[in-house]
Length: 317
Image (cartoon, rainbow, N blue to C red; front, side, top):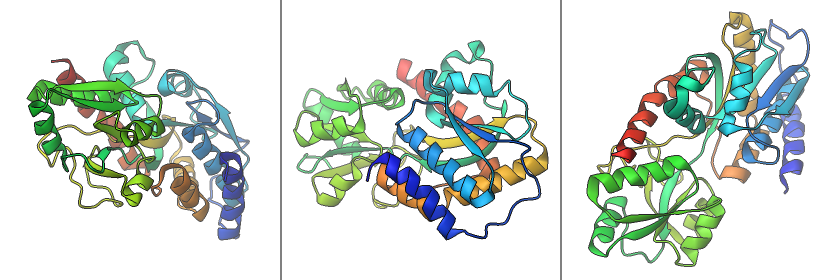
């Protein structure tokens, strides 16, 4: 099913699943705009449009999606931070690009990690390092030793934080990794299946190949293990103190009325946990929705900045 059809189905299923969804006491005085910090057609845009459709069906509000791409979400959040905190404008981004920008050039940006009222997370990309099924190593720790003993290894990545994790490990171990830039997780999988790469990062595209037995997991890049491979240890568990947790999240201008914040958070939670979004996220990312709620979402941004700063410093040593 194509992304557009999936999004249309999201609204329909949400309506069928919650036909009598109660309206919160607070109501917006006009349309609610959900700005997406990335271009149309990508996973962030697709998720945002599905959430907007589900919110409309469940609340009766008019929810408009507006794409505002640029700088990994920087353009959108730079605009959002200046908007009125009236509950009628929200923004959707991804934690890691936001945190990377704040860590590397925060003094030039018009916002900080604590400049917003955080409302929800949608899903965490199941980032992991995988290898061909017949590779002579089964864990990341074994892969490091194999690389050191064989003059290096090729690792595919498609995002800056993945590259920084491996640079940090190189600095710690002299593993001899050679990092190969790819356009997407699908391209990395192709390189692994074709034996052009010794290992590579996946953020969902890899899961079907684990199930088919064509790839195997070496480590999860998040701080905790992942449900589809519960026996695979994290980098941290294997002795390498690095992690990346790319959460899709939603924020609003700081200073929301408490009732408006409560109503928006509840409406988002209902949309994110609807059967429609569960199906969509399963199709796009091979995982399930995760809404941490306002407080824990804020913690991921505010506390996560320290983790990303530490990772950058470790990669540059």
